[in-house]
Length: 148
Image 1: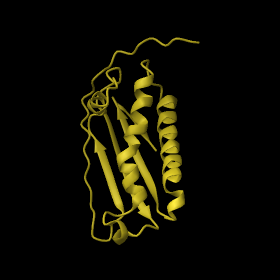
Image 2 (image 1 turned 60 degrees about the horizontal axis):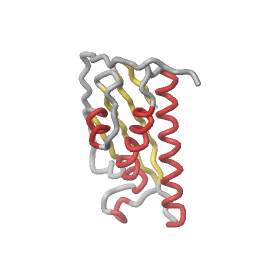
Image 3 (image 1 turned 90 degrees about the vertical axis):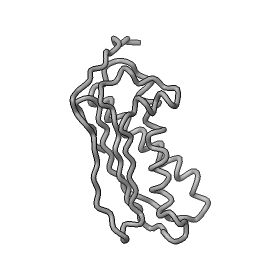
Image 4 (image 1 turned 180 degrees about the horizontal axis):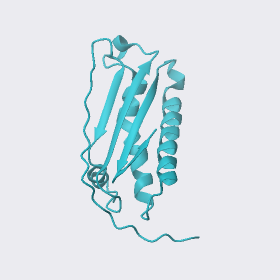
């Protein structure tokens, strides 16, 4: 097995922020902004100190085929994604302490979304719900952005 040298984190002068324009008809739209993934990882007992800073995640989900009135909170799938994408991504980012090439970051995002999709289907397939959602996510690590 090939060993990768440990990566010493670098801090860049980039500030993540988000703005939005939501209206009453956007009942199935949800978003999440994790401004400091390293802090989130620490709270889950995962070290992400090897990743360049800033290290942040923004994701936007637009539900479809859901019944906003039935749940009282919008689309079940979008809510599930808001609560769980970062929980799929953080262990992947913590597992490799070398330098993250762009392809490795893209793979971590893709794998996280695939796991999220499979878990949602496993949990909700028997409920008869037809909720789903579209997603757009941006992972910021240092001066690089991975968009999924």
